[in-house]
Image (cartoon, rainbow, N blue to C red; front, side, top):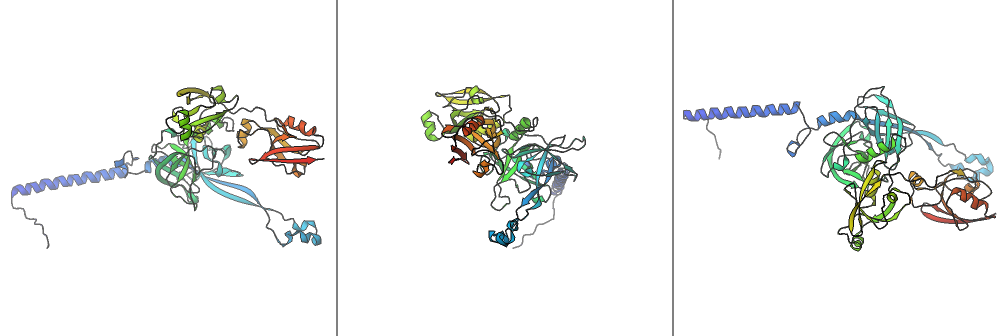
Length: 487
């Protein structure tokens, strides 16, 4: 059956109504077309769910000039490949030099991204982007290239700061967002140079906050996003919808090297802390609480009378530390820092590390059945005793080893547990007695002939007074080793 519509109008009233309807329809279409044209000319950042179909172009246009490409070059030594003549057998006929093969040097290139955070040319990127680089080149969006100077590097947070000289030109830059204001579900943009294809923009949401897995850094409290992040994006910007830096893209979780929708960014507040605590001196010196603890489990919570799990039960407070000065006690449970909930030691480390040295943090603790607030000064780790680095001498097994006194500050600087005590080896001279006994940099000498070692000067005395017989204990990569030497 076919349905046909009649165009015949029998009465004048019907003809008038049809004319009015067509006029209204025409006006509606004109208004719609006008709005569409205006939307094309004046794009805005989406501010509501109904506007999600609009464009991110204004935000990208404003922010992308401040995101740069970083190219690095470093010289690496490549060992010679083994050959037939590597066998010691041939030395009998051709002499000892037959096995000697010169190692080859080659130039290794890598790429990454960075963000201009100050119009004077200060750039933030990842430490792993520039680690070991002999040359660092920064390319702006307008294709200008500059040689960059390394101002600051911090392996613990995987951050580095560069500076370029644009001859007094005010460069485009991005401001930081308070990353504590971010929420899961917020829209974000990632800008960087993935795989070297050129500046690329991807979009997504914040998938999680405070992530402590998937990233190799020491201070793990990261923003997770599903915005596509790939190799080369490292050091680029993760932006909020107001065009500010939410974080610095750092790593991805991937089985094949490509994006799987799980990317990690260093929160803006941690980046700002590294800048403020390190730019003045060229060395990152962050606040240190000076206390150790464990996560409050259900059994621990029930034993302490807490209504919920989470928090950090303090089991050790270091003398003269910020925790000691601020009257934190063993047995206290830290629940929050400056109003931010603390669920585990990693979250506590992040909150303290993002503080500014010289200020105070308000720490909420559970003590004797009630919550109290403590004003803890944000201090650096003490260097007591002073490291006093020097070379051990004499006719003894450690001669030729360069040693220094361990302190909380020294331990944090070289990335070992603060709880370790003793004298640490920083260098071993080639051909020395210490080298023959396989003493290695990083070894921590703890005792000589059953006497505890506290300082390197005391160690030298113990070695000199051993009367030809030494029993030496040391810690190497977490293992305690003991060896005996007799003259």
